[in-house]
Length: 355
Length: 263
Image (cartoon, rainbow over the protein chains, first blue to last red):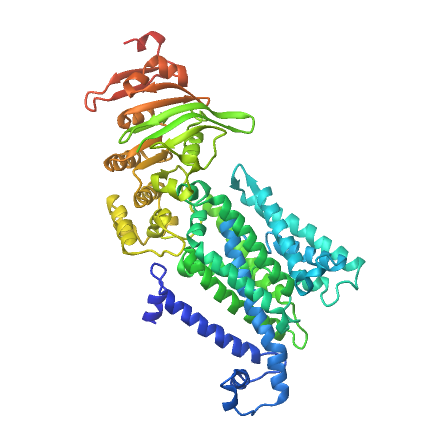
């Protein structure tokens, strides 16, 4: 216990140890979560099935499991768990980025309407076949354009004399998400067949149910690239939290960094929402707890948020498919039920601190 | 380090907030920028440390055009202590001070032993060694201001720009802040609200009114009852203080008759 306290000490957290611990938890999460569902598979069996697929090790493991289990694990659950991890990490990193951009810890792609913007543009893209020349990526690219437009819009509306006004920020986020949700509904109702696999409920409440291996590559690549670029700019992100004037006085090219952050946040939000719909509050909750754990330094916050976000979303998704089994809850509804109260609490505390 | 500002003009939309401002600061000087609220003190300073970009005019540091420098390079030459220092996020005092090292860092650099040393040294200079691990959010206004000065020290530039650094502070903290900065023996350009404070610490003064520099000179030259009335619209009695040897100003309330302030 003493060692635990020492590593998670706010003043001098033992970062390598925390990261290793969380990676182990993430792997355990993947094994357990793959087994859990309406049909359960033991973690040991899951591990064996997975190991048997790794070239080189595979031939030392004899098949002691049923083919049904293997199909569930490899065809259904594992892609879903992997997608959950990528989506969770992406949403958390997106939340951190947006919070640095607007210099407020209440920012989140869902709260500021970015998810709704991405969803509306994705449905529009599907309806009119815009970007269809891009093939498999057309959906992600239209979602990216939607999120970029929304971020810029919300940012410009809520800037009053060079400062982000928190009331304007939250209200413009609400207004824009309502407009965009409306657009999504109109499209859904007027052209029911154009949406194919995805329906309006998918976009508005988020789900990982349709996960396929083919959906994973783009979000994973985007997440890794964006995370790397953000890590290289961690000093700049820290400086942004001090406010524009101070950031400039400390040598940060604020305009350039802000443009970069808008680009990265919309990229992550866009490709994530294209595969999972709107999963709210992850980008709010995860960075908040990460900061409680290790403070505000982005060198620590970024990797930890990604890991915690991955773990959180996978478990919430397990709950989503267990709570009313054999029916399934959309995972976004559960994150909203958990994250909403936290948001209200943060909002109350925020206004108290101002006084 | 010599700062030269010529014909600096800046406007927020229609209204000119700085109008043909010319000033210069020689190495080692402590220069005060005074004037009523809204006279453009912060605007001028913001333009100098590049939070705003001038509409017209030139700013040079040792002859080099400041506006053409990279942000990093100008941050190595100028350190800024502003009036609002709230950080709505969870940072330790030492983390805030370490951010002063940012302009010294390249893309892949991590904090090294020298960075840690200088952060420690800066905090020690302000008598805050034991506060290094405290949460910045929980500090008082005066303590926050000292942390920001420590950050400016960690920045290792020898020119400080201060934007009313003692606003909202108790008198003890006001004196402390200026004493600390005076002890650093750096070149200073500071906006100052309190005229007596300006008289105590500044070598020369520039007086701004409605975005223009209307007076310049030593505190003795600038602070006369006529000048103060002209700029601020209040009557005052000015004398030399017997202990400090500096100009001391006493403001006269309306009840006191006009003739009583003739010395």
